[in-house]
Image (cartoon, rainbow, N blue to C red; front, side, top):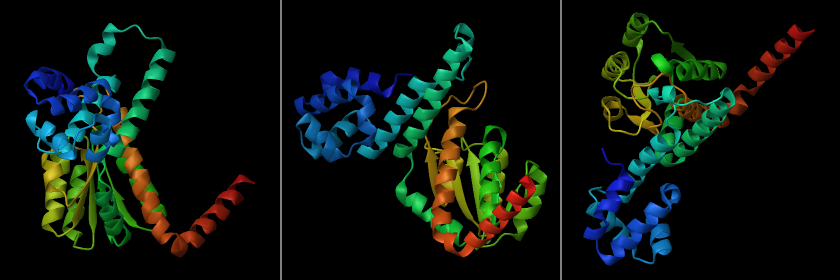
Amino acid sequence: MDSLLDRIQKELHHLTCAEKKVGAYIVQHPEMVPNMTTKDLSEKTGVSESTVVRFCKSIGVASFKAFKLELVKNLTLSEINMTDFSILQQKDSPYDLFQKVTYGNKKAIESCISTLDRRELEKAADVMEKAGKVVFCGVGGSVTAAVDAHYKFSRMGYHTIFSQDFHYLLSIIPYLNEKDVLVAISISGRTKDVLELSGFAKRKGAKIIAITNMEKSPLYKEADIKLCTPVAEQDFRIGTTSSRMAQLNIIDALYLSVFQRRGEKILEYYYEARNEYIKLRR
């Protein structure tokens, strides 16, 4: 399948002169575009904002926002895909791989700036601040993010629930109501266990926050709030690396957002715990 940049190059001769300027700039500077507005791109290329929108439609993308999301996906996969089985054909030293992993993780985190909708993050912070019970669920490579979120939010005094036992979580869901939240973490958004739990929780009235890839998966469509990660790795891979870093990055942002709102009320508990930690060091 052709990448987005390949498609643009193939379509250039079908575009108007003004649209060609937009396409040529994007092909030459693809890494700049995800953080641009239509106004930014129009100024860089010397065309109108409406031309930028027409360019997107001419290559089969509905809007500039959708175009940027697809571009991020293409750039991320092409630049940091280290976990497919092609690694077997490469002869990297451990330090070479360390550098590649570092770059890949950094790129995945930076790509979150383009895939995460600030309004969705605000809504997630609002819901989490007022939440009663909070259930975190994730399987496979997403377990790390679920455990980290469970740990962080429980430290703020939330009644948080996490388990790798699907049947146990299934038994918890009937006790949820409209004051509660289920945070479903899935890279693909198609994990059967996560979908079952999120669908069940939604029927009980709980709010569903999804941390998932920006592709419109079943979990993406079902969630009340969507915190989107970039498509950083192929579905068939030797392990989860950069995708996990993107998930943890969003968890950290959500945790700090809620802590900033609740901090004054709970700071004394943090100090109390800190004093006990210090005693244990003596």
